Length: 256
Ligand code: ADP
Image (cartoon, rainbow, N blue to C red; front, side, top):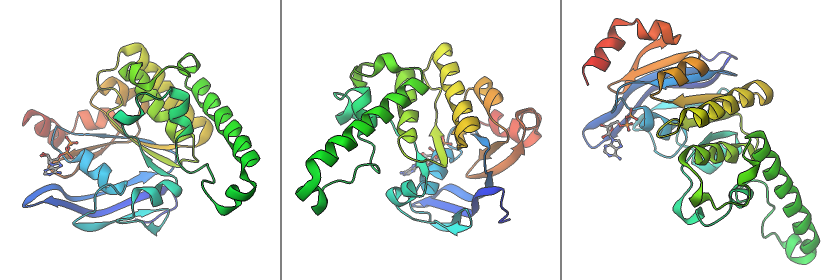
């Protein structure tokens, strides 16, 4: 199943917590350039699967490949440098920083405390900071939240935080982004802004997305294909219409 169109290949993945099989033989492919939806009832193993793919958790058994390379068990920062990113809630300690500063904090751009910088660096650091700031402002503009640049991240709304999380992926050269529950507690208007940002990142910048979301309107607007998980493995894959008509999927949702 390793063809060029598959950016990510997951083979028979298992993640056990003690005797509990949160991910229980999941196999799936993520097509390059797709916006793939991941749905399924609560407890289906979606978040755990995300965390294993993104290196946050080590799998019990199974393999994950990216562009044909075995990336199983690689730590998040290594995957990050390969362009595989999972969005995270803005951590509490970053709440007192502005939105722009939060974007400028994303690792991967700064040359850091190298000897070169210590000797000759003052000017270079100033240049880099200017470039970083310009990039952060460009990201804020792309996401239509330029007006939030100087606001503290702890003071913006839940939906605006989601946009900022998405913005952090734009500070590096992401290839594939895993988004966990973008829509939770977000109002319609902002949800549409988030959906538009995802679509534009996909079309204009070639991002591949994998999106966990409960809001079926959101999934329907954005995602093809949709993968449905239940009890730790993949039940069905297809368009949202196909998934909704699938007997096993209906049963899995009714069972919860
Ligand atoms: P979903 O995202 O589909 O709702 P999760 O991946 O969050 O599902 O959880 C799958 C199952 O694994 C749940 O029953 C959850 O309680 C369990 N689980 C998740 N993380 C842990 C953990 N760290 N320790 C023990 N059980 C866990």
